[in-house]
Amino acid sequence: MMSTADSALLDTTADGICLVDVDQRVTYWNLGAERLSGFSRAEVIGNRCADRALIHLDPAGVDLCGAGCLLARTVSDRLSREVQVLLRHRQGHVTPVRARVAPVEDPAGRTVGAMELFSTSLDPELVAERFALLPELALYHAATGLPDRRMMELVIAERRAELDRSGFPFGLILFGLDNLPEISAAHGGEVAGRAQRMVARILSDRAHDHDVVGHMGEGRFLVVIPGGTPDELLERAAHLRGVVQRVAAQGQGATVPIRIAVGVARAQPFDTTDSLLRRAERRAGAGRRYAG
Image (cartoon, rainbow, N blue to C red; front, side, top):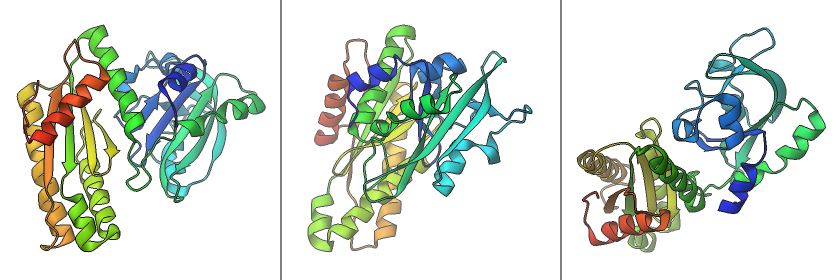
């Protein structure tokens, strides 16, 4: 499991390091990736890699995004690959890099994403040595495939730093599957696990660009949302809660009702990662859904 110190260490490398989930949404983007691409973490995390932040060209200058996307192909076929490509900076110039990509798997062997290291060093042995650090970034919840609590805390810390730098706001919506113990007791662990996976898929499918969806503990899910007024956060929370309860109940049958508690918190200048999470968790536990 990667600590904040590990993340800081990876920020000292000149190499670009990128981690995506199965939908190719970026969940990790280090300072090396910022420098080589020209795109900041705040612009990239939660967005799909195909949205032009990570643009690879073959030696002839042909765009490899879309059908040729290295990360998308690796998620699909579960094959590691290493190629020399051109990386296009946001300002238009290109840099030769060596890209090494591998699938990320959970403990059960399911593919939950892919990771890439891109380096201006074209020495294959050196790139392979640096790439060996990347499995520590695979911070995913095994049952749902979502980023786990530690990864989500890093995402919040990055959004919090952006709030300090530019004043750009963000908020949290915490969802709690409140009757998960009852579902497990009445219908067994398999049905309870299926309910969690269904909630995870619904939230992921309805995520907007730059949203990050993660698993915070048994039956707890978090959506980190950039921008938005308090009223807009409440509207998103109410909409998502309604969709989850309606679709999950249909998917599990009428005998397995789903109860969802929601807590909404909008980051304030005085907040830390812990205080913001505690506020969202407290409101979810109290059934209060206001933002602020």
